[in-house]
Image (cartoon, rainbow, N blue to C red; front, side):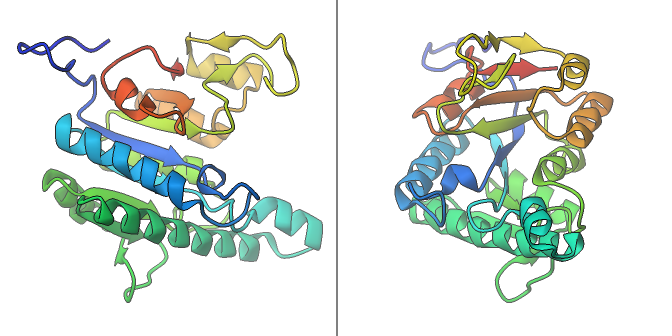
Length: 250
């Protein structure tokens, strides 16, 4: 939990550098496809708040499910899995550029780095450059996944967190899901939410937090994960003030 600052205005953030993982579906319009500008603006406003008022370094990994779902698309159409994943990587770049625009309209300097090189629209992912941007107070958006098929954006978030020395991953959920549950709360009214749970329990119980590769990587590198509803107003700040929001996996 965060401790109150001497002036009593805000708790001390428990982490000074974090990676926020946001799915493409969280940014989608009510139809489930495309982008909702109100959601983009709300998220941008909250990220600007914690960057400028709490001094937390923020990196963001975005998914692309609002435009393309790689594995389901490949399975349903007979498309080559690697090809489907590359299309999904491009979708994440679209979301990254949209979030960058919202952040910069809110006055926050931002850089998009993509693992799939697109020099006319984004920087290539370079670890040292990303860290330097964070040190200068910029928000860095990582798009293009890892640049490799067969790896999810969950795994990208875990990998980038380790590379930039982030102290935690904030896994943003949506659609009213506010943490890790014993079962799908949309299907089982008796599902209970965990306040805290270990990595190994997540794996053994088969809970849908992040994919197993990402969870194992975080466990091996001791990177805590906070699973919370990123669309509930004020939640990003609450997490970074050390308040009890969502579920802590560690």
